Image 1: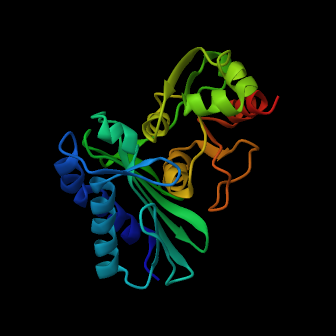
Image 2 (image 1 turned 180 degrees about the horizontal axis):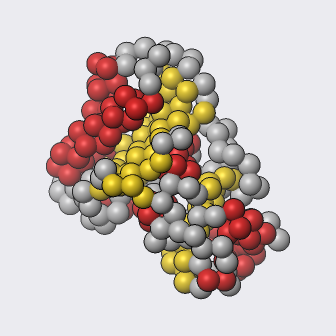
Length: 257
């Protein structure tokens, strides 16, 4: 069986390989469509996923693939690559450089490798279970913050949380020492680097959170659903990242008061 180190090297290579494709569309003429849930799809989403699928077909033709744009192709029941070609399509099409590329590798249903690529920023984060996390080949780790009242808290998809769970949103607006509203994967990457202590996120798909969870956990943090359960392909899309167990326990109380 291919070892995790070799798989991680391939994952990092893919994150770098897609950069020219993503940037060739960024802040240019975009062909935009809308999915049934009204989320936008650009030519870049499709082109980046096609690049990754072509790479995987060449190097791992027997592995399964689950991509945001082309869906599930299960060939190997043990190995599965999960792709979000452009995490933050709305950011991408509005010229915001904080869009990402997400890639996870699961073995027997467990996330072993995660990559967060930030093409416009020139950053690649990779986390490997049991082997730590890196940003551009330099080790990274989460903060040591244990007190929610002193923490830097990011709330992703705050408009959706406000609309669907106003009471939770109201509590979040009283939590943390510094609060920021955001979207997409980069706040979680900031947490893996130790700049942010807690990130609450909402309405995600597996390709949005699996890669991110691998990076955060490899950096020493915790990422679960809002009930504190581990994340899987079947999770409900409400997730929370925290730097320490103490912070995780405190933010879960805020979410489930």
